[in-house]
Length: 432
Ligand code: IMP
Ligand code: MG
Image (cartoon, rainbow, N blue to C red; front, side, top):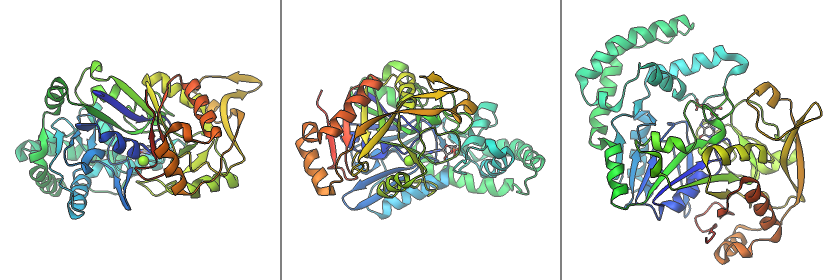
């Protein structure tokens, strides 16, 4: 703090929700700065499980302000549903602010998402189908509708009058049979504008004021570095920038608003979606990790995640492009019970050693991982991990500490948080 970014260092699903919830205790403001309802953050409070897609993860803490920044693409129906669910479970959701510059996901974006995936064939990303890519396309193409437009029905009508025929022609040209009813969309979305209007504001001004007043702001990354539109596994990732610099752009702040960047690293790798994955496992270890991970099914799509060993080639890229200042390492309990744990330190292809993550996806799909073997640690009951967490990092089994040291050394960043279970208690804050 004061300005801390937390983001995924792998393909998403690193356990960010839990880390953010843990850090949110010390934050005055939590900001979502990119992505949309394709994200899925799971937070466990006692026995209560919450899965968030759009609301920032500080929403469960009544004194925390929660901001959806301009970099987010917002699906109003999903957001209203989440707010309603929270209310039903006894949480006030008044501490929410939405940027007037955030782009709105429209019904035709979802139709476009579906048909484009079909047309892309082997180049499809396996999207979540939430209309994320097409919404960002429209933002960049200047066809977009922003939250500010929803607040004035006449502005919305004006835009839809121009956009709907264009989108209809595009969908027809793609061979889609979806039809777009502009009038129905206007009715629906003007209604959303009315309901969400009270939350909409210039969040850039708001956040600058908060930082100037010395308040602590936590920027909540929604996906993982390797899904980033520039630095990720293009074209198999998502359509937003997922790296730390986006926290500034997507919140309307300068880069100096960011003091710390915490990269969340899961003790192994997982991926929901298509594309090359050099350390992917297909054997019984994969099944072991998937089942014990408990949550190794996508939070948004419920698809089984592909799993594999930790990959330091990937992680070195993450450390570099994000300028990581610290690591939060998660799901180490899930690895418990394996005799040997492998970590990929480099790749090889045609007798050549590859140290840096390649841009060429065809090459990435052919490389072979070079592994270092680490001694495993026991499979401990949840309670026991909780007891260890209460004592601190030195109480961790030696093999875990060796694993963490290797990770920290390769990523040139200290381990700041260790998570050894799903509950809030199974978390160690490493003192600096
Ligand atoms: P989209 O973001 O829905 O367009 O999907 C693009 C790719 O990113 C797909 O492979 C998705 O599975 C993946 N993806 C998007 N968001 C997440 C996330 O929060 N966790 C994991 N994978 C994601
Ligand atoms: Mg997730």
